[in-house]
View 1 (cartoon, rainbow, N blue to C red):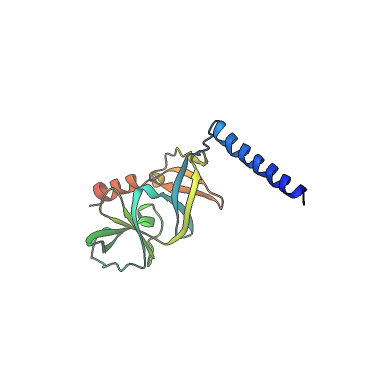
View 2 (cartoon, helix red, strand yellow; view 1 turned 30 degrees about the vertical axis):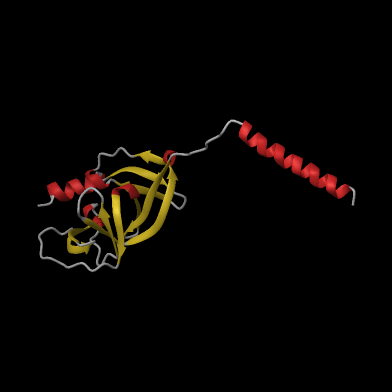
Length: 171
């Protein structure tokens, strides 16, 4: 029994010393620059969208179809009391139009929604895992970067470019 109190006293002294050392040591901050992305699929093609570029994400939202000469325009939908046009993101990027896209995202820059086929979830990727993509192909003008995600490379859709196309180039 005489060993037990000394072991407790020794242990308490070690803990006090460790506590004091923690305040005496220089503080280390290990913050890695990351990017938050929404992993999506357009048909079977994987893509990503920066979360900072969207303000809402909805599934199975009713779209009221409108007659239009613009094939990418699916119709309109209500978001938080505002009616916004809904465009098929895949069609804008050059993929076959979606039959019934299940997901809608609301763009942060302007009141419009973009429809896509499937959500693969949330990704937090280190910024050094994102590479610039220089391409002259006009069909890829909305993709300027690629994220090297764990599952596969994902082109990052530049929503500002998509919005510019929708608001200025599509009549």
